[in-house]
Length: 412
Image (cartoon, rainbow, N blue to C red; front, top):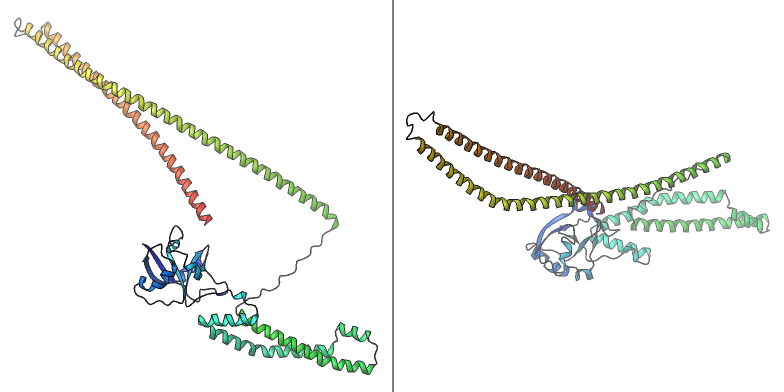
């Protein structure tokens, strides 16, 4: 089973014109709880049992599922609900295990696919009534003509005055091309004036209807002002060759800079390859030296075990021989001079042998200590070198992982 966090998308966040909502606005969504379902059931099955999964909450059927595509949430069509499974809403198929619902909607159609402007107006009014915005649009449609009536009347009167005072060039052409008397010209002018007024009234009525329709279809549309004209710079003809030469020089410098950059990049790649090769060679050489030293160490250690056993046996034999020698010397000298043992010759020999034996033991201990100390120094040096190699490798892996994560973030 997978766990999905269910969110309701508020109506004020949804873009009815584009039929989508950005992912950046997910902080404004309303949480409906979470559900635990099988990842292999479809959205159509989930639609029928969503209330049970949410803990017995009554959920209306008038909602649409949304799916995160890129940086926006898109509406899932009815046919797609029978094909999409819930595993496509959890990682790794999705960034977060979340399910988005748009309540109060049964289906969406393309607003711009209708054939006429009146059908567009009716369709948008119906969609607004579904989401509770119908009263606002009807108030806009009622207020806009009332506000535009005095404005249209002022434009109409202004146009009539202009048409009465100044004749158009077309009228001048017509009056000059037709040879009639002055009274006939006055009658034609008097006839043209009401015709113009009728034509202007028709145009104004048509403009008013178009404004009404535009206000109904796009109440919040913003028309950007025209861009300012480009300023024409006055150039001296004598400066044109100088400017052209400077331009050519800059183009040549740019091309030369590009060539130098390519050459430097190529050199950098070659140096990087060489450095990597040297690092690999150094690592391989150190590995071989370490392995050879380990091999020699273990072979020497194996041979040392048998030598130490032989040495211990010889030391025991030497100790026994020394004890026997001392006993023999003491037994030979004791019946001759029992009271003056300090000045006897045998006593001197015994003391010399004893001191020599102690010196030999001290030398052996010193040699053992030296050997152990050398082994310990070598082992510490080897451990320090291995530690430095491991730290360098760890630093390289950290840098590689950081660059990989940064590239993934930039790609996302």
